[in-house]
Amino acid sequence: MAPLSQQGASIVMATYNGARYLDEQLRSIVAQLGPDDEVIILDDGSSDRTVELLETYASFCPAITVLRNVRNLGVLGTFELLLTACSKDIIFLSDQDDIWLDQRRERMIAALSSPGYSAVLTNALILHESPTNRTFFAPGRSPATNSMWRNFFKNNFIGCCMAFKRDVLTLALPFPPTISMHDWWLGTCAVAIGKVAYISEPSLLYRRHDSNQSAAARRPWRVVMGDRAGNLRAIATLVQRVAMVRRGDGRRQEK
Image 1 (cartoon, one colour):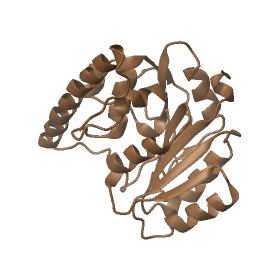
Image 2: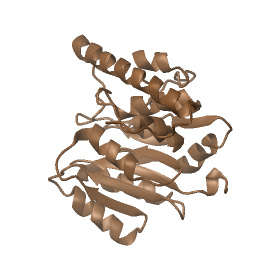
Image 3: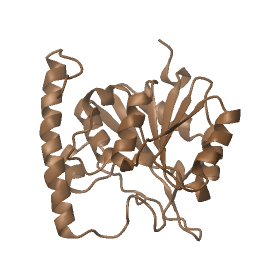
C-alpha cells in the first residue's frame, strides 16, 4: 500500500448561505489538492449564491462534487451524510468560511503517518473582521487531545482543525442521536482507537463572526448540562461499539 502522503484524501464541507466567504476558502483548498483527492460539498438549503459558486468551481475542478439536501438537516445531519459519502482513507473536515494556509494538507497527513495515530488536531489563527494574531489554542499550551474525559468537560476537538483516518468512522457512524456536535464525537471516537496528534503551528485562518455555528459566547448552564447528558449516553454507545469491533463483529447493524 502506498504511504499516506501519496494516497488521496477526502475533504468534506457543509455549506449554508456561505457565499460571502466561500470563494476564498475554496481557492485555498483547491491550491493544495493532490491528484487523488476528492472534495465533497453538501449544501443544506442555501438561498444565496452559494450553490452557484460551488457549481462554478466544480465545472473546472473535477475533484469537487456538489450535493444538495432535499430539506434542511442542520450541521449534524449534513456532516453525517458527508462522512457516509466520502471514500478516501484520510478525511479532512472543512468549514465554509475559513482559509487553509500553505502546506496544511501535507503537514496533517505527515502527522497521521506516525504509527498508532488515528487523528490530528492543528492550531488556527483567529480571523476577525479586523486582523489578529491570536491563536485558537494558546502558545505553549497543548490541548488535551488524548483524554476522552477531559474533552467531555471541555471540548478541544474543533472540526475545521481536524483530520482523521477512515477507521474512526467504524465507530462514529451512524451518529448517536444525542451527541451535541459532530467534531466532539469524531474526536472522542478517534481517542477510543488510537492517539491524536497535535500541531501547534497554525494551519488555517479560523473566521470568527456572529454567524459561526460554534459560538464563542458562554452558553446557559442548562444547555451545557443537557449537552453533557446526551454526550454521556453517546459514550455508552461508543463503549458498546468498541466491544463489538474487538469481538470481530465489524460494522454494527443497528435499528
